[in-house]
Length: 176
Image 1 (cartoon, rainbow, N blue to C red):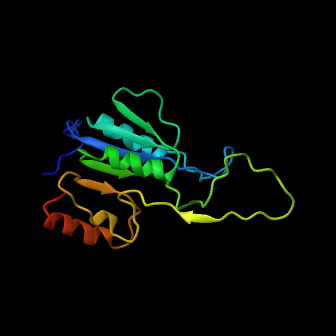
Image 2 (cartoon, helix red, strand yellow; image 1 turned 180 degrees about the vertical axis):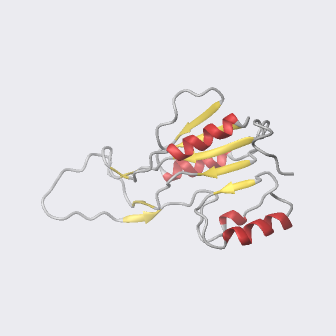
């Protein structure tokens, strides 16, 4: 049964929501890292909206969290591995998982324990793929994952035709 935001401002009351935010940072050495420009603002905003709707919210973030917000459980992470571990721990008992983080696809194959010195000439960095975060679009259809405890799962940009295939499948499996 769908609820309207206009008629019920606390429509997520009693539900747990997990939101990921920010861009992960994969260390090269103690000073340098591979990263991206994700600010985490979208994930922070989604977590805030879920709080306003009455949800118990866990924000797993690789970015600066939104100040001190009563009722918001913040889990700070740096790397893709830490993000994946935190999602696996936090998703138990959650009804909604919103994956707004920009998780690194690659990390350095080896991390130097000391700051690498600048040297002349070119420099090569060998990369290896990171482990996919649960719910990631790693060849499986993310929005096609329906479990007994997660009612909604947002984890990748929608592509043309997704809504036409996802909604009927969810309806068929009794999930909306």
